[in-house]
Length: 70
Image 1 (cartoon, rainbow, N blue to C red):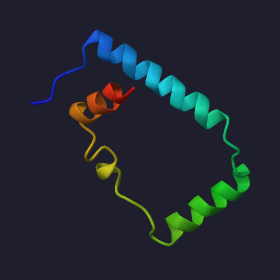
Image 2 (cartoon, rainbow, N blue to C red; image 1 turned 60 degrees about the horizontal axis):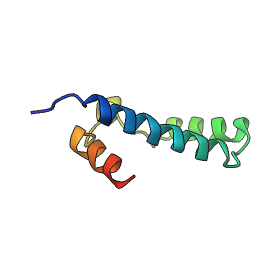
Image 3 (cartoon, rainbow, N blue to C red; image 1 turned 45 degrees about the vertical axis):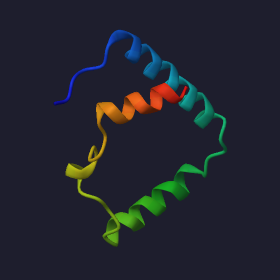
Image 4 (cartoon, rainbow, N blue to C red; image 1 turned 30 degrees about the vertical axis):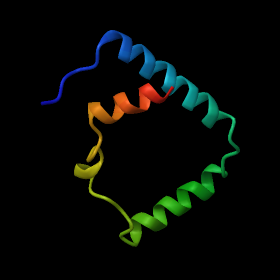
């Protein structure tokens, strides 16, 4: 059974996500036009995943494991 995260776990998760956001903002990104063109090409050529699979495999236990590593 899946349960919601406790307050301390939520705080740790927030801090971890903030670290990831900060790190990703420091990465050099490809120009938006190139990213859009690649995404459009992927979509037009069937290189996609159903939206129903978006959260497959994501569970509270996995989030907790990631939090504990920090």
